[in-house]
Each structure stands twice: as C-alpha cells, then as structure tokens.
Image (cartoon, rainbow, N blue to C red):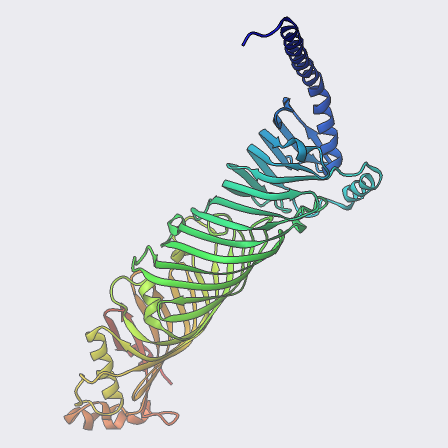
Length: 518
C-alpha cells in the first residue's frame, strides 16, 4: 500500500523526532555519567561511612537500568595501616525501571568480579566510633536500597587479627551468591570455598548480618556447612582424608560450632596402620583469627573413646605455635592406640584409662617426634600378643608363686599403672607398677617409641621366697639366704632390670644392687 504525501511527512517527522530523542538521550547520558559517578561516590560515602574511590562508570537507562563500573574501593574512615575494607575490580548492576525508581530501590542483580574483602581487626579505638556516630547523626538519610541477588564468584576474604604477629586468615571463595541484601538487614548466602590447610572443599549456606560497620567482628553469622576431601597429609606425621558436617551461629569474633568429623583411615606416618577416627565436637571459633577453643571434643578411635579439651591457635601445626590440650579416656582398648604408633601387630591388648596433658611444639618434623605427654594411666587385663613374651611372663609368674615346675603355656593377664612423660619419642616412666599373679614389680626408666627399646630398673616383690622359686638341691642350698630377701611381708624382694625391646624383653636380676643392699 502506497502512503499518501501527508502520511510520509508525518512518518518522516516522527522518525526524525525519535532520532533526535536518541541523540539527546545519548548526549544526556554522556553528560550525566560524570554527575552520576560523583553522586554514586557521595551516596556510598554517606551510606557506609567510608572513603570511596571509583574508576570508570558507564550507564544505560533503556530498556532496563544497567551500570558497569571498575576499580571500586571502600576504606573505612579512620582505619589506617590496614588494607581497604572492599575492593572490586569490576561490577555490573541490572535493575528494572519500575524497581529502580520506587522506594526502596530494588536492584535485580549485582555481579562482582575481583571482589576482595578485608575484615579489619576487632577494636580500632573509640575515637573513630565517635566520629562515625557524629557523622551518622548529622549526615543525610540513608538511601533505601535492596539487592535481590548478588553474585561474586572468585571472592577473596581475609580477616585481619588484632595481634600483628599473627598471619591474616585467608579464604578463597570460588562461588558466592547472596540474596535480599540491604543496609541494616541480614542476608542469606550460598558459598563454596577452598580451605587452604588442610586442603578441601567447603559448602556453606546460612545468614550473615546485618553488618556492624563500627565493629565488624560483632556481625552475626549462622548456617550449616559440609567439609569434604580434606587431605590431612599436609601436616607432617599424619595421613587421612577428613569429612565434616556441622552447624554454627554467633558473631564473627565468637562462632559456636557443633558438628562431626570422620577420618576413615587415620594413621601416623611412622607406623602407617590406618584406623577409623570419628569425632563429635562443640567448639568456639574466633572468625577474625581462626583460633579455636574445644569444649571438649569427643573422639572415637576404632573401639576406644576419649575426650580432648583446650585451645588451638590457627596454623599452630605448621607455624611457630605450641598446641596445649588435655586428654582423658576411660575403659578404652590399648591396642587401638598402639596400632597408630607401632608397626605391625600390637604388642599387647587390654583396657586402659588415662589422663594427660598434650603438648605439640612448633617444628617441621613429624608430629609423633614433637608430641609431648605428661600424665598417668591404668591398664587392666593386659595380655601380650607375642607368644615368646607371654611365655616368659607365665614362667616369671609361676616362679613368683613358688611353682617353678608349673607349665608356662597357661596365659596370664597383667595390670599396669603409673605416671609418664613423653618427649621427642622417649617415654620416661618415673614410676611404673606392673602386677602379675605372684609378683608386683615397680620400675622406673625409659621406653623408645620408635624402636621399642626398654631400659628400666626397679624391684620385684614376690609371693615366694628365693628357695621356693627353685627345685631340687638348689632349693635346699638357697633356704639359708631367704631371710636376706624377705621383707615387709613378701617372700622376697629382688632388685631387677629390664632391657631388650618390646618384642623381646629381657628380665634380669640386678646383681650389683643385690651386693650393695643393706
């Protein structure tokens, strides 16, 4: 259909009007961008009481509101000598016209690239708080603004400790999505991050905020997490892959965490005998420096349960920090613990109750070498798995009972107890009580964890006399010396020494001490 002359004129005028309008809008936006940039900087300064820097800013108002900016930096007022609170390499804002021009303003999407967050130390002085409060009371009203969704994959989060001698706590957040973000209200989040040590993936969902700008360490946080495929091999001396689930709530400087952790094949590299480890814990974590307080941790090592309490500073295993804990257990199986430290078959079985101070000083050597213990223990129904050792003990028991001709094939059980100190792989026993049928042995000396070497001496208190421990003519000739060894109601008290190794111990009469006795 051919348009009339008047219609063509009207259409031409309309198209010309549209073209002129687009040119005007383009010029207006071009001229408005510097104004908008300065307005954005001023608004952000007033909104967050921060020094704000902004690089390039580009705007588009049709068909939707869109803004793209670069090099946005927030630095909290009055906080000097620390990195900026927030740096953003590039950001993109998208909003619907109806949402952008209503109150509060709704931003449909904020996409952040190259986001780095540096949480400042707790307590930067009352002066800056006063200054902030003064500005807050005299400054303009905050702009009501709500972000429906914020996507910030690849975020770097760093919390700065109050103690300058400590390292910052760094997190590499690979995925981060926030919903319903606005000033003065909490936000929900989903995050996936890589834990640096031990390396593993953490998935977390929860709530964060509202942000406490005067003291960020007081910002509330809550949620649930799953920690997977954490390689414990990065710590010298131990191996295993850890998985953990838990919930947490509190404030950044004091987060209460409850959860469980499992290492199906936990092992010490010195023995490499994996054993399942399960823990249930209730701990307090300082989110500003990573320090952890245990309240306590309940652990299950195969069939044995024990508790550990105390405090651990972050990176204590690999930095110049000392770990000090308290451990205790009751009714456990000694073989579960020995399997960790001893290669091959456990040298003994039985029940054990213990309490000990655990100290791990700094260093690069294996944990077992650095491990320090100071405590006491009681072992019951102890049986030695080596047939040779079991036979020697049976023989000793028979002689102590005055039954030297009795067969040594009948298995016996023993009781052990005493105090101990472990330092650099050497177990020092200032007093060890060892009881078998017919004999009570008191010893002191050392035991080497790595090679099982034994060096002990003490006294054996026997039910039988010296002569009763022998047969035939020897018994007759030894009767006259029975009184020399009989004391305190015992048939005989003999000075002894034990040497050899845990797999092949030797029991000997200490002749030197026999001759010097009074």
